[in-house]
Length: 117
Image 1 (cartoon, rainbow, N blue to C red):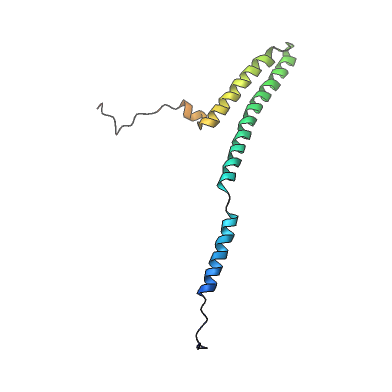
Image 2 (cartoon, helix red, strand yellow):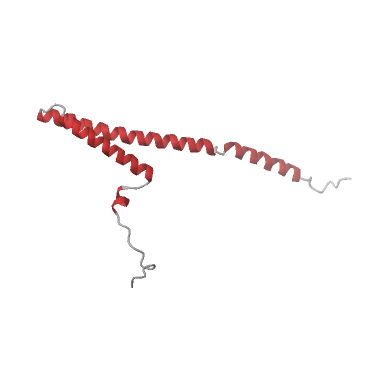
């Protein structure tokens, strides 16, 4: 017989609640494969935009200088080549993880490991 003053055993209910909560959290977690794919697409779009922007600005500036000085394709060709080089450099820096300041800094020797003293 059951004692009417004793509360009902709630461990089974608590276990079911925990299982339901875990299923809900598992459904909301992002898929790592989809996250990696979206990161890759984002990086590819960024690199393409950097290349296109560098070329577009250089060609626009070249066309403006050509119309200003009256020499038809001279500045456009020169600045197109420079814009392509700048675009490639920007893509290289983005891919390798370097920033402009990191490329110019020289590595200082570590004083603790310097045995010349």
